[in-house]
Image 1: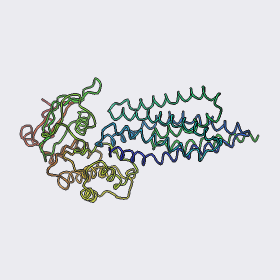
Image 2: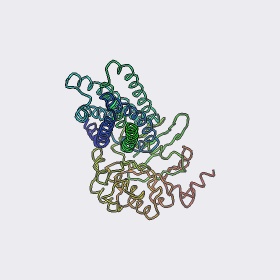
Image 3: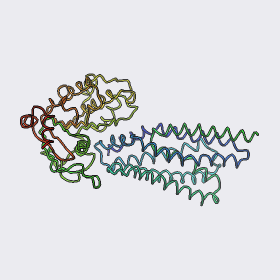
Image 4: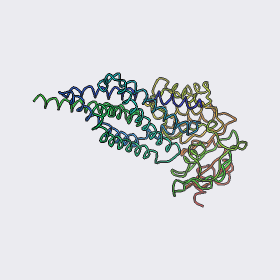
Length: 230
Length: 227
């Protein structure tokens, strides 16, 4: 069992920088775009729509690039050569991404209080959604790892497919739940999405897309502001 | 002694190894030879426990099955994390394997590996040297080297071969080296296994093969391939 904790620690060390970038990137983006709206609704809606688009681009392009490169193969090779049962490797991967979910649960409310009213019940309601989302992503991400460890070349397709399923379910959830639950709930579900996808992809693509995302959003925001001024 | 019996491997409908059998006594060095696609890397991956065989078995003479902890495997690809310094690579492996730190430091020194550069900042030759130092520092019974001389300049190749053959060789461990540099590495081999299209072309004591087929292993391979 000690191997498991060593693996978990290794995964945690590896992913810590990705997680930090993801949290800061998303919160900064949201903060920037919330300045675009004039009414309180616009201040919530505009950044949400823009941030909502990110995980789609990020997930598809990031996954494609990371799987096109040899990075994942190399990492899998390193981990698979360790004298651990494959179960521990998969569990470590699962626990790491699940841990990220827990960290986000406590970090994001601090940086993005815009989502929360003063009622604790609301906070808990939103948090439970995040946990479900994070654990689901962790589970599917681990499936990809399991497939790779078992020597199936379809590992990457399992990860991509599961990522697509998660995105699809999220979209359905938005369509069904948002009209009833309101914009705050949509926001709570939207903000962590790119983070989970980023953590589930690779640390190499993550900074690239974080930077790309920030630059892209800055350009779009300046254009929108120019129009508003005109 | 390592015993490999009737080993076979299929990926889907494609057969990459078929009925490969050999024995490698303790302390001996096996040269695993063959052209690209002959099945060398697949055989090494099976021996390293990275992929299961479709048929046949691998084992120690006195044990039932192979243990990854007893096998030191150096793959052909640069599989280390790019941000690793030499000490990071060592501490990672020391978390999972029995390692000899003094041998590691000696190997770094002998192979002139820069200590304060990240893995991504090293030249290909130095990346190979760092991976070799890690592989050699393992307390293992079987050492597997998959093309460690590939893409390396002749001077560095001699250095690596000397490290394998003389400086860091453990008398009680067995070694398997897959390489295309047959002429340079030939002196290391106690035994030779030559694969062709996944099947055994030649297998046995290096000296016996030389006497039977020609003056060198390369000549022997050419002669055997013609038959």
